[in-house]
Every structure is written in C-alpha cells, then in structure tokens.
Amino acid sequence: MILIIDFGSQYNQLIARRVRENLVYCRIEPPAIDIGEIRNLNPEGIILSGGPSSIYEKNSPKIDKEIFNLGIPILGICYGMQFMVHSLGGSVERAGKREYGFAELRVKRQEGVLKDVGRSTKCWMSHGDSIRKLPEGFIVTASTENTKIAAIVHNSKKLYGLQFHPEVEHTPLGKEMLKNFLFDICGCRHSWTMKSFAKKATDEIRETVGDKKVILGLSGGVDSSVTAMLIHKAIGRRLTCIFVDNGLLRKNEMEKLKKTLTRNLDINIRFVDAGSRFLKGLAGVTDPEKKRKIIGRIFMEVFEAEAKKIKGVEFLAQGTLYPDVIESRSAFGGPTAVIKSHHNVGGLPKNMKLKLVEPLKYLFKDEVRRLGKAIGLHDDMIWRQPFPGPGLSIRVIGEITKQRLSILREVDDILISEIKNAGLYRKLWQSFSILLPLKSVGIMGDQRTYENIVAIRAVTSKDAMTADWAKLPHSLLGKISNRIINEVAGVNRVVYDISSKPPATIEWE
Image 1: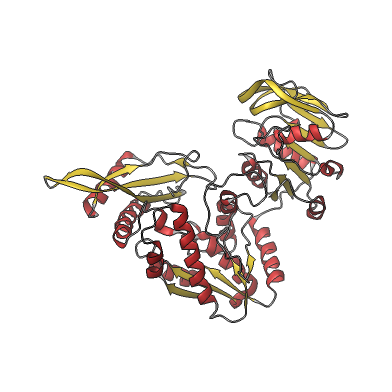
Image 2: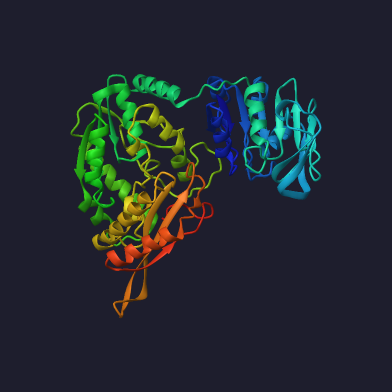
C-alpha cells in the first residue's frame, strides 16, 4: 500500500490512478492524519502531493514532521518536496521567475526515482516557489534552466523530491519515475487486482456486519449494483435492496430496471413508487442545490419508512465512490473546493441510527466496472452509463413539471437509441439531454413556432474527474437533431455542448 497525503493538488487523484495502474493499492488521506494511524496503516511508501499553497502562508497545509523519522520511503512532489525541505531545515523562497508548463530536465544522477531516465527529458512544472537551500544529507539529482534544484534525494533516509509533476502525461517518463519509487525503492508488488479487492471487501463486510441485516438503496446503476452484488456475496439474503421510483427516471426505466435487476441479481428487492411525492416537493424550485437537497431529504424519508418494515436492520449500504466524496468536499481534509453536493455524501440525516457500509468508497468508476466483471455482474449493468441520483431533475433546467419531464424523456430516448445504434454507447462515459429554460423562434409547416431548446451532452472520460466533449460524427448529430425536432412535440431547436471538464462539469446542474 502507498499512502498519498493530499496537500490540495489538482493532480492528487491522478497520482492515485498512476499508482493503481501498477496494481498497487493506495489511499489518499489529509495532512491532519495522526502519526499513529500512519503506523497502523503500515504503508510501503508515502507520497506528498503538490498543492496551490506557499509553504510560508499562514494556513498552508502541514503534516506531522515525525513522518520523516518513520523509516518509510517518502516522495515529495512540488509543494510536497518543498514541505519536506522546509520541515528538515532547508529553505524555500519565492522564485525569481515562476515556472509553468514544459521544461527540459537535466538529470545529474541517474539513481533512485530517476533511474534509467536518461540525461535529458521533458517535465511539467507548476510552481512559484523554489528551494534555496537543502537540508543536511540531501543532494541534487536534476535541474532545469530556471530551477537549479528540480530533483533531490537523501539516500540513507530514502527521501526523494521532485519539483515537477511526474503523474501528468506532459512528463513523458513520469510513469517510469513513479514505478522506480513503487518497486525499486518501496518494494511493492503487482498484487492489487479486483479479484483480490473483492475477496478482501467481502471478508471486511462479513466482519463488520456480523449476523445483522443490511439495506441498500438500489438505483440500477453500476455503483449500487456492484455494491449489492458484493454485499450479497458476503451475507446473502440478509441484504434487502430498496428501489425508490422518484418520478425522475428516464422513459420506461422502472420497467426496464425491474427486468434487468431481477434477472441478474438473486437478491431481495423492494420497489417503491413515490413519484408524486417528489414532484410535489420540487414544485416551483429552480435552484439546483435546493433540488438536490429536497430530493435527498424526500428519498431518505421514503427509504426510512420502507426500511422500518424490515426488522433487525442495523446497516445502510451505499455505492459511494471516490469522485462522489471528492467533489462534495474533500473527505480527506485536504483543501479541495466544493463543486456540488452528491446524494451519497452529506445527504444523510444527522439522527440516523443505521451504520454505514461503503465498500466502494476508495474506487474509481472504471475500477468498479472491473470489479463488477470480476464478481460476475452482467455486462448490461456493468456498462450502463452513469445516471445522477437526482435523475432528470438536474437535466430539466429551471422548474420541474410533468410536461417538461415528459418532453425530456422523449428527447433522451431518441438520443440514447441513436447512440447505441451507432455503436458508441460503451465508448462514451455519458450521453444525455438537457431541457433548457429557454424558448426560440422556429418555422414548422410554414408557421411560426416558439418552442423549447434542448442541449445534447456526450463526453469521454476515465473517472469523471476530468472529461472531454465527444467528437460525434456530424451525420449522427444531424440524425439525432432531425428525429428530436420531428418526433418530440414542443421542441424546435437542438444544440450540442462542446465544453470540457474542467472548466465545465459533466452535468449542467
């Protein structure tokens, strides 16, 4: 295991992905983590991430300096390197010239992290501070034209520092540098697979739950389905899943999911129709955060009412993933900004007596899909595109009404069917429609119309942390637009969203 300390870098999740790509498990924890907990975790190595702060800022993130005395190999990246130097008696100061973007790395010593890297290679810099003086025992292993101390090592203590970012694609040999740290320095093995994760997770679920019962809010998405399958393997029929129809699902989704879920999962599932209750609570609400909170509140009310009918329940299971936690608020204490609230994070009542079981909370979406494959989940469920917990409420921009939901359902059904017919469904991370709170003038049948505008959104991504808009063929976009305008009453204009994440998010609300 590798422990990653989150100092607020925009790349800290990328560091985690790079480690896991090498079949090595890693965890991200806050700088506030107790030194005793680090000892208990017993990591093979520690990576200190970069971050936007200056080491001399009043509230810059810091971790207990005792980590440098644990005898565990440590790699500091950017701010992490500066923190290491500052903590051990060196000095860091504002650089005379800031360095952002590509730089030519001149390797002086091909050892440690820089073993087999070559004498010169490109790297990606992003810093405004530089190291002026190294602590005793450190030596410089690489530099750039602008940064004399670009890489350092303390061989006897196995402390390493890189001023640049090895985790990004812009550092071509960065993956090799991280491999050197993982395997040559830390002695890790390629042992973290989804098969091994499944075994460990089911063992932990059995140990945690004991002979008690668990309930799970099942949506039919890959996250909740994999969670259900994993827990079912651990405790069998002592798991009961509750599917709440909130009236915000896509066209015929309830019927489709009933067939899929009961066909693929031999699990206790209760279906609850609560659509009218949700629509009443959302009447007149246009603010997206209010929508999410209302839906979360009503969901828990409906869910708890159904759960009370099941005797002996002590645990609530959720399909929470890493990105859910990160985007709501850094659960690790790092300075990660709130982007939007997620239904799995922060939406639970404070007086809830049930204990949580979240077996996927340290996994990314692609890892969850691989886990689903490893435990025998059907491909139809594994490859189902993500669908937000608040459903179509956050894709109907503005007020939610039955009529507006009906329009969006028809539009979305056409879009998905054409995406599947084109063989692109599995290649896209998400593809969906948005009903805008705008109308536009059009001409249909030689008459003036003033109807709704819908937007089409299709993105490619690996984990939803970043995403790029999909370059769908113009002929396909034309076909989709033509069908929507001709077949869906109330729509006379279709637009295509060509925004990437960041700066946009995948969903519009």
